[in-house]
Image (cartoon, rainbow, N blue to C red; front, side, top):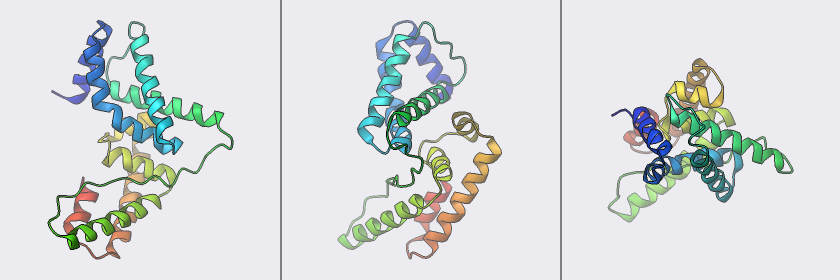
Length: 195
């Protein structure tokens, strides 16, 4: 079953007062939504609180909400609005959110030398992603780590699908160039850029 359809089925169950369906939806999306909120806030505890509040709102207003097609987009847009509202309350207002680093999972390594190589590679990847412009990095993370489609990213960020594609092309070009300077097995670069 398609994830979008599965989410809508869960939402219908939530509307029928099924707390287990809410817990299932929460478990499926919580971690990615927290990571997304943190791209705005740079404070994981506050990001987690915002995501939890979005789910509380969803539960409390389950009978009034009308979500017909894409619940995932609704959740991301809600988190985005909540994060932006939280930023407006902070002084000073943070506009440049460029230092979010992501973890990339690699296969288990057998030797201490391989562990060190993977750790150094991870740091290099984190630096390359961190060097991307804010919106470019945000689009890259949503596409590669949150598995969102161009259409979903465009809807969540209120930009065109062409703009999403342009950001991804720019991000991938930057990462390929940055990682070319670092000697490592080609399959790691391929895994990152083709994920």
